Length: 74
Image 1 (cartoon, one colour):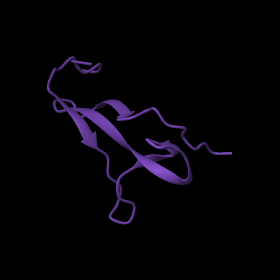
Image 2 (cartoon, helix red, strand yellow):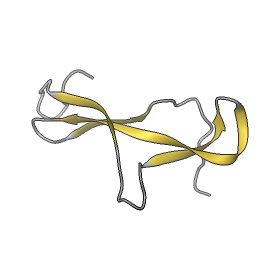
Image 3 (cartoon, rainbow, N blue to C red):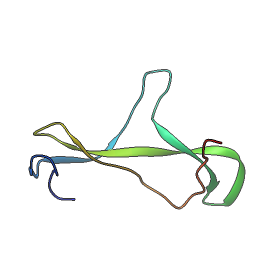
């Protein structure tokens, strides 16, 4: 995406790491599959965002590596 869908600006800051409070750290999805295959332990996959610097809208949220099995709420 090269332009903001809200104001059409191309002044985007891409790949920003989303952080929570000091206690939480980075916001992330938990996944059970890493580069070495399935694991018993949940591993974090950080959530990144693209931000329009003109209107302040978050234009995209994504994970860097979507090739995981993500944990879902039951």
